[in-house]
Image (spheres, rainbow, N blue to C red):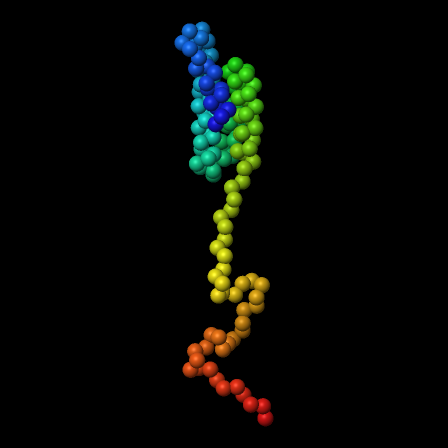
Length: 131
């Protein structure tokens, strides 16, 4: 987004300079706005991050030729670095809920059969006597 702002702001000079620049200022403004839009889409819709990263790098490379050396090279460098970071970014996977403290975990073997802790007090059998 900063690279798009840099590329977009340079052609928005005073009116005398803008008139002297002519139609060459329009691609600069458009590329800067596209780069800002791609930065926002990567932030708010991360599932479009691959598309946003590729378009950002392409706009930054095109701005080098079409827009005052890509914002005097600062905008192009920031755009290429930012676009490649967007492309490489992997969102964290959703965290799995932790098991409740009363439930058995994977490390503890589950008890087999009914135990004294799971039976009702009325159903507990007296211990067997050995004969």
